[in-house]
Length: 196
Image (cartoon, rainbow, N blue to C red):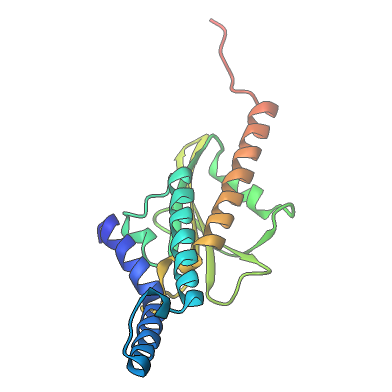
């Protein structure tokens, strides 16, 4: 689905129940006094719709700032993914994920054809939330880390952006922490430059 079509679908689908309720109340009001105007629309439902649309566009701005493209199908199904390149070997990234300094603990580790998939568990994740980190070796001293956060099972009746707040927070946390440790690793082990 194209990006503009996805945005329109999200705005409409999320607010569909509220729009139906607003129209029903306005029509009921009209049937009572044969008068129809803007004052007949319930202000609290209108406020909910305005707040939801404003938060949706705020999250779109945050995603753009983070470099996450919602035009990609993988970011339209209730999960968000971001790739981060690190000057760290794959084993070092795996070792960092095991450390107790993280707010998350490792739930499972699986070797796949794409790389090592680590499923993380956060004590406040609800039953349907997921957090997966795929570590792929770029070369002997570099790796590409793909962080995916959002829903395990995305129901068709749910909007994709209902999970964005926590997904953005989790992705930003891991990106920040991994890059911080990358800088620490580089400071402790500066790259070897041969003197010729």
